[in-house]
Length: 370
Image: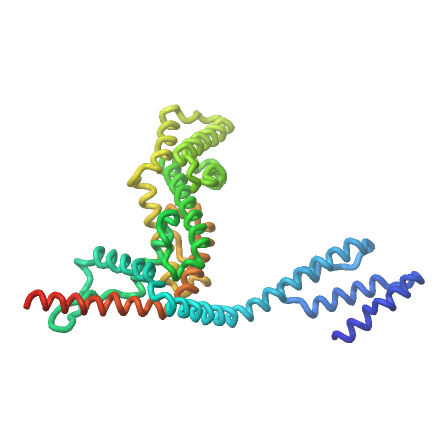
């Protein structure tokens, strides 16, 4: 096929034909399109079928080169897809080996990681101390039957609410810090957007139901006015007040067009006030949305098939479903790669924290009783 292409599209021959006004443009175009049809991926069949030789050779060539660019990208993506497992495997081995070298030179290189996991173990013990079954240890002393997988999952979930300005991230996650921090910021913004939508829908369900695309419009307004909400100079309460005003204005505009009575002043003030209350500590709505987002992200980490089928979002998160699925997918990918790279180091920490420390405590207890 390569030889045939070189023969038909011989540049010198075509140049000579052009000098004598004897180029068979239609024939060349048909040949190029036919060859592209043999080489392209099935997904491009429709694009190829739309390439029909016309009198406008410039437009035709533009279309041909456009489809060729798409075919090139298809090949690049296919090559990357084929190489990804090998590259990832080498990346995992390389990063693990480099970190092992660091650990051998600096024995304290896992101190923050150990502290991070220890805190999750303590949280797990506190939350299920009355419910969790215990496994009898030596000499009748019981030790908690904790699952390292559960503890590690909870440790990763903490990173979504991590104070990156004040707390140092665990050593095994330093390379992912920037991405995790960005995902955390986006997730916090989505949490506020979901709260705004939930409050408005619950307060004015009948009114909003009759306004086409109101939820999407309010969502767009919220994203615009919440832009930069993680900057120190950003006034979240003021932004929520503006969103409340914009929401009431959009509703009244729709009611006016349909000849209905506008929202009275008291209702508008109530809507704005409820939205502004989102910033208050222990606000019921943001606590509820936060828990549902937490459960959704947790379901991603424990689901081995999240890339094929995303978990179902809970009520109240429908408005941000697309965005939270994107963030969740990115977050789960970071976590899964981190597990593969640093899994042996985490296993060593768990052996120390869940077993050696327990045995040490038992010995100390026995010594003190004797």
